[in-house]
Image 1 (cartoon, each protein chain N blue to C red):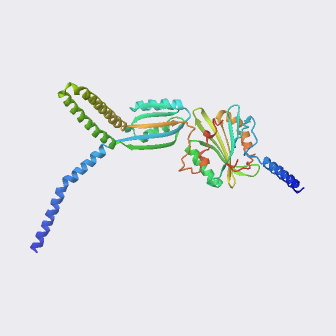
Image 2 (cartoon, one colour):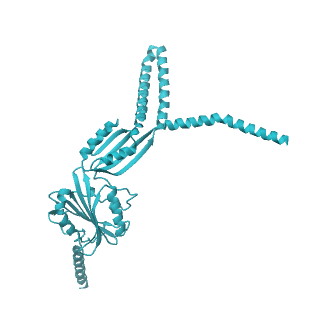
Image 3 (tube, rainbow over the protein chains, first blue to last red):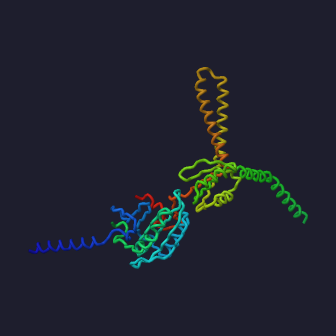
Amino acid sequence: MKRYKAFIYLIIVNLVLSLVFSSCQSQTRIDLPHGFAKYEDESSAFEAVTADAVRLKVHTVRNEPAGSLNVLTNTSQIHFKQIGYKILRDEKITSTSGLTGRLFITSVQTMNGEFRYLAAFFPDEKRIHIVEAAGSKSTFGFYEKDILSKVKTIQPGFFLPGWE
Amino acid sequence: MVKSRNNKHRYIVIITFCVAAHFPVIAQEMTQEKSRSDSKKEIITLDYHIRSRAADAFTNDMIAYAKKQGGYLVSINRGRLVFRIPVKIGRKNIDKKIDSSAGSYIYRASYQNQDVSVRIIDLQAKLKASVTNLEKLRKLSATAGLDDLLDLETAMNNSLQKVDHLKGEISYLESSSDLYLVSIQINSIHVSSSADQVPIPWIRNLGLQGLTGAK
């Protein structure tokens, strides 16, 4: 009888644990902007693309070396200058869940014409949640407003990078 | 009193003599130093990364500029232009030319000097030895018997090839030092900032290269 009870308990614990873990998403994600198709693979990054090749990527990295939002903002500005990107927008952004981050929209000349590149990052204690989007200037403008509103819906994944 | 004055005179004479004796040596060293700096040969590489709204127009403009200045286009490959431009134009003028092209700007530039004077001296010494060797072989061939003639001919051919090779290398290094090697990378998306200035790795990965053609 005791053995039977222990077996039942084990099954219950197992069920509870699998329910808990299945409710925790592994990918950091945002609500999918209009016109995007999401890649449904096992990648740790949330990636999507439009019919006219505007790309979107949401992922999480370790906050290493750990920097405050201010330090990360200044370092990003230096980075964009060093790679020849012109910063069009550089502003504070707050997600609907209360995460504070930084948004950059940049312009860059490529051999295929002018491109727009968007990067938004939201640091928490140990992680940085990053949203990137890019496309040619002519097509990106069509999606920009919706992407910006969806960036704010960012929902951090459960795992630290490297755990999954 | 008289004795001490004589001693002083003696010292002055000795010192003057020593200085006079060393003067030719000092003069010779100064001349050598001057000729060394005169014969200093460097290959100077100018490396630019630029963004341009009109890459084709920029390329044509730069080709025309290089030609006008007595230089030439070496290669075009995947948005990288390589030119040879005379050193007498000056680095600042080349910077100015690239930056002043309509719709273009330099976002990264680096310069490298490679001193090749020692290499040239080295090659010249080797050339001298090879020429002497060739002369010896020529003299030998005049008196050699029929049996040795074939071996001598092979040795002379090898020696001649070596002399030509050395002459070619010397001439390349000497002419290279009169021309800048100018490399211009246009509108590259495969660039990252330097770890010295951007010490946070994930920030260095921000940019189009992480997104375009990812899947």
